[in-house]
Image 1 (cartoon, helix red, strand yellow):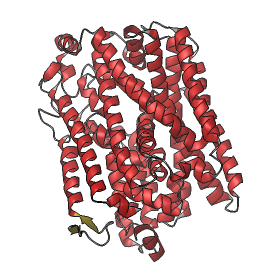
Image 2: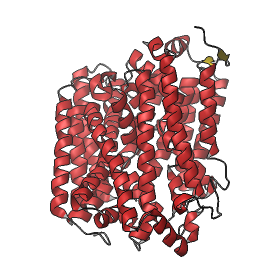
Image 3: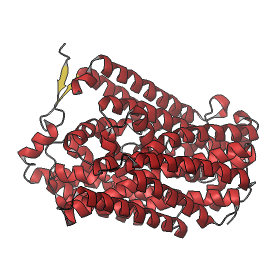
Length: 490
Length: 89
């Protein structure tokens, strides 16, 4: 399927993207020299500094959806669409850091936690919680990776005319190779380049769109004459941002983001709390600049590149770039969009391979396995997960943004276990286990029956139910052991 | 130097908190919950345009984000000057 109004520039695009891919593979190869044990492979020995920590968190959270799927949605909504993540963008890492990060940085160092289920199993003294969380991670995150590769297929198809599946394979397998080599260190090294490239992409796309439309004010004047409701809530022509959904978005991308294992484990990577709070500033700046410029470009794009059909909105940004910028700059920016997807997939692949190797194999199936065996299993899992994600990308089960919203819902439940585990000494395994199971069932039920949520994202009522269940069951059952209190809170 | 603290119930962690951190929590909470309030400057179905004909609600979000980043930076400097990072080491 070819994009509607894009001018392809295959030669330049392939050259620029090849240079970019060679660069990230080189970084993966450098990292492979250090990824010789589990601690290095999963949390790079807890040695990340401010730039790695901050840009790594930002580049992992903001995915290809930020650069293709969401701008595509906003194109048909207007300024109201910016509410997807602009209102509290700078809170995206601040809220998780304040609620749990401060504690997890110290605990990760002290007790050698490598994965989110590692922490849950220890805090709640339960192997069952480890297994359930690990399985949920595998089920929810593989489609999430697939969603990222969908974007790559769109971009390659748009700029080269190659079949959609070629782009999916290039991205899926490229990330898999550098994660296979360097584990999380490979992912984090590439995240620095990718994070910077993402901000540049957002700023230049906005600049290109504004130029094409004759300036921001001129674009707004034209849009105002055509559709004044595009300047009000809930947006137009697609009335999208109703108040309950607006509030859901305000909470979803900061408070509930920390339930994503690929983000929660970032706190185990950081050297100390100085790094944590420095990283909060770096990621806040990166996130705010990316979304304000990229999403504004989508609104201005309504005037700059009008008439893109609602079913083809993933093409809005590629169209803008191809029409408004020189092919070399356009190709660099498209590499930036690919970077957004790759920087998310890499951390997710490591989180999922951790769920397989560390949480299911080493801790549940074969506790006597030596470190080398588990590391090899982690690497094999990395390959298999990467291939599965690529296949999902080819199959394309939904739009990028639909898949992302579903995944954030499913794993957002972890947030309640994490926050209560860190902040409430009375939270125990019975509460956590019942909260987790009922929470997961609720989020799937509410996703299937959206009318029941009254316009809120399915995660919001599911999280409230999880919170109530966890508090009530914890209070009705014996408190955690003295060892846990001593280990986690002294 | 002993810093003034605020005591919380024993079941919470931490069960006491330096008072200056509570002020930071209030600062960020005000910014965070400001965008929950429906109204002309945030969530509105009225046409209310600011500079460059961009709706005022977008300008509100821009200001909230800038104040959050500036606040995070000042808080970081304060943590550093109070020696909180060294205490950990």
